[in-house]
Each structure stands twice: as structure tokens, then as C-alpha cells.
Length: 125
Image (cartoon, rainbow, N blue to C red; front, side, top):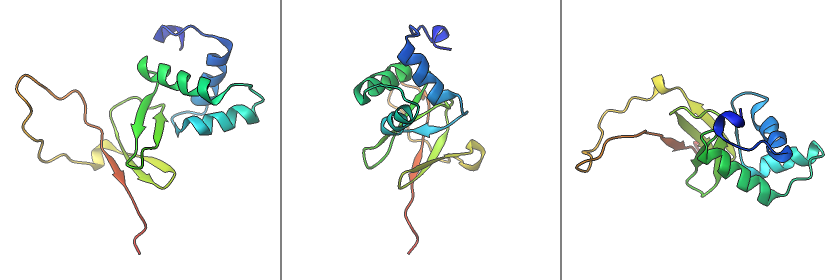
């Protein structure tokens, strides 16, 4: 997988890729991967994890999801899709469940590359 994305498969990158991708599609933060690395006895700094996540994102292996509270998640599902965000939980929204009714007029000479919607939730009290 790393070679297909033109990423040099160092020991740390292979170990981190295993943590990220071996359990299927998921969302995580750099801090969560750092915790998992510690539990797995991997001696990888948080800075290295941030650099690796950003590199994987740039190469198309991950998709970055930013929340309204400035928290950044990474998603192993790189297809265009939408998310519910509640506290520290991020959940995919089935594209079939969200209908875009009115797309604003685009600037001249531009076209839509992708649409990714995040819906921030709160308790109904």
C-alpha cells in the first residue's frame, strides 16, 4: 500500500500504517494513534506521527476531517462522504441520506471538486 502511494516504507511508517489500516475504515486523531503506538510498544514520537499522518493525507491514503472546535481527525475512508461529529466521536453519514438541494452559483471558471459536510451535534436538553 505504501509503495503504491509512492511512500518509502520505513519501519515507523509500516508500523503506523498497520495501526491505522489493519482494523478497517476508521477515524482517529494523531493523539489516538500515539496512544495505540505506546500500547503496541512502538517508540514513535507524537511529532513523527503528525508528520506521517500529514504525509499519508497528501499522498491520498488518508482524508483529513477538521471539526468546528479545531480538532483534526483522519479518516481511512478517502471517498467523498459526510460526517456527524459529537464531542470526541465522528461518524460517517451515508451519502444516500443527505440530499444537497441548492448549490450556490460557482465563481466563473470553477467547478466542484468535492463536497464534504460535517454536522456538529449537541445534546438535546
